[in-house]
Image (tube, rainbow, N blue to C red; front, side, top):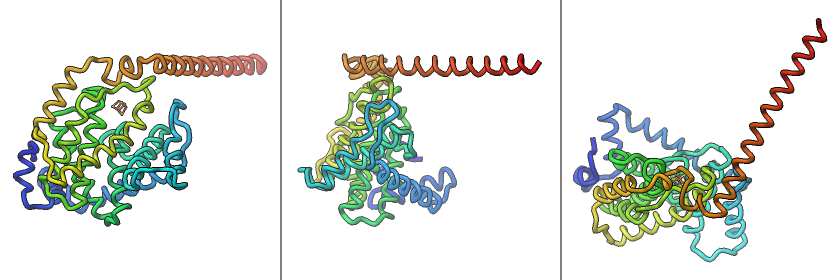
Length: 314
Ligand code: SF4
């Protein structure tokens, strides 16, 4: 078992990082590498389909978001964007996935649904823009998953446990390590890419407006996909995290414990408690109450109809 990032660095020195994770999984869980790779080929396909569907937009369940990818895609196609195509595509694909998530479409949780746009945003944009073989992306998904699973040894991967640093922050670290791998980085560079990404999300709170994974979650995924790419770029240029990755994870856990309950997915703090956030939360509650009342009235009407029919039949 890989117990920590320092242990990973020892095991993986001079080796292919994906191979190290695949071998460990095979030894520990008896799952052959070929089976894991096949499963991840399917996940990559699901991610790609999701990105394509998501570009078309459509309102979310709470009607707060959903058309961000469509707008960015239109701007990109018509030459109204000013960032480089890799950055735009990372944002666009992350928004596409999160738009689908907000409409209850099929996505790949990476590591969670709420943070599910970051990894595909980074990896699929890079694959496309740099002409990288899809099989390398599949192996990069092994790396992303391996990094996430080491973090998960000491941290609960959920906004409810430690804030958004535990979701979007972890996704960004997983994606950064995977991107470094895709562009030929060493395990050392991948681990530093992950550390640079994660340490700069520490303290990120979970404050979903109305308790829905819509605001700020959808756009946050796009911004942190770019954050992860930046971390990977720095690591590939030889920039290292002064604080080792294991200690960054420890800091994340401590910060998560120290965060007040209102900033851990309860919708009782942060953006959810702004005037606009409260108004939206109230509207969503009123609409839910109205739907409940309508359903109860419908049940009552049907019961009355059945009663009337029984009486008429006598
Ligand atoms: S704000 Fe909370 S619900 Fe939204 S992505 Fe972050 S952790 Fe998930």
